[in-house]
Image 1: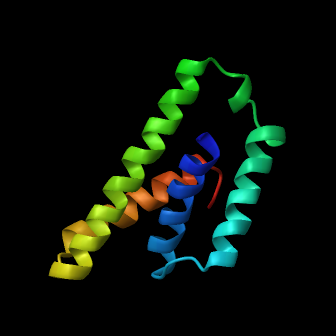
Image 2: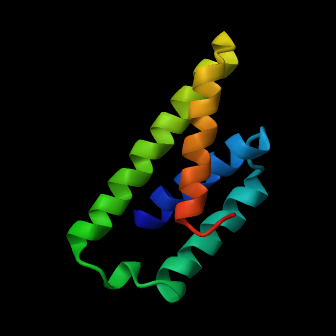
Length: 99
């Protein structure tokens, strides 16, 4: 669902920015916070279903790209893909209000 797609994108972005995966406790906290934000702190759920689907799809796409770039950077030591992963992570976090 949308909560998990947004949580996955934000969690992946935070992990890439921090240089480590989130712990289970951090992941559960993040999902709770995303759920709370989507249900009470934003108008996302009042938007048209097409817009919600677009957000869902974008979150999954960005997560896949971030993770693929980050994995390539770790495996091959490629600075360009590391930079791409971090730029996507920053853009994802900025889109959800993180600075």
